[in-house]
Length: 279
Image 1 (tube, rainbow, N blue to C red):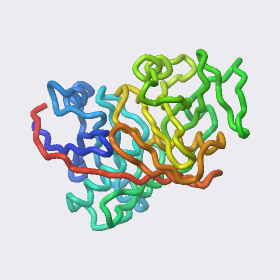
Image 2: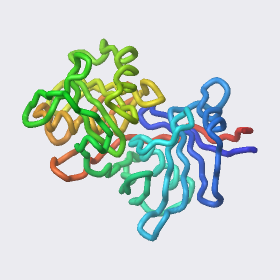
Image 3: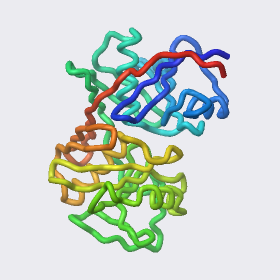
Image 4: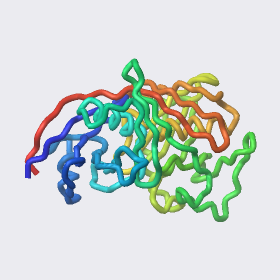
């Protein structure tokens, strides 16, 4: 089959975007892997499939697949690229859009400067949401929030619609992301594996971050990872309510007022090229 696609990126986190609003699309896992392969396909961190809204309250539904072919729950940078795509493709004339993902509804807004703000929903701290097995562990509490001891590390755990484990490091550039990342990602205490964040606090309103993502490995940016790191830093008393996050692919702004309020993420979304591939 021939498949038309659009390549997009948000802060260096890159995506293959497929429009399935006019007819259903069903790709086998091996076809997804081919699309995501940087040598034999198009190449991307994740594949985004845009579908019609499932009810009157949602403008669209979109599904997220890692480049391994596995469907996942959420992707913040992908959500920004989604908005840029549907507006540029003429699929909507709205500047504010509601979209359903696997497990939550997002509100997204295209700003006048071309950046996109995503209402990521409220963070979830219940261990069952990740899931995270804390049996037999005794956390260290900092500012009333838990840091969990796992293999000699201290990790903050939470969900932004997908699971995250965040640790603070002194120098993010020297952090052992390539070696520690996969060990934490696949740790037995995270039954569905976990995204792993390495956060350096530069000031109360600024952090540097690297993230080792499930299946994808280290990416240039991770939107939900940026949200999780800032939320953890606020809960631990290290950060203020508005934080600039420097990733290897660019800068994101994260805002969280605490409690059950939503996390807001603002950042870039760019169309790279359009193409067609035989699968």
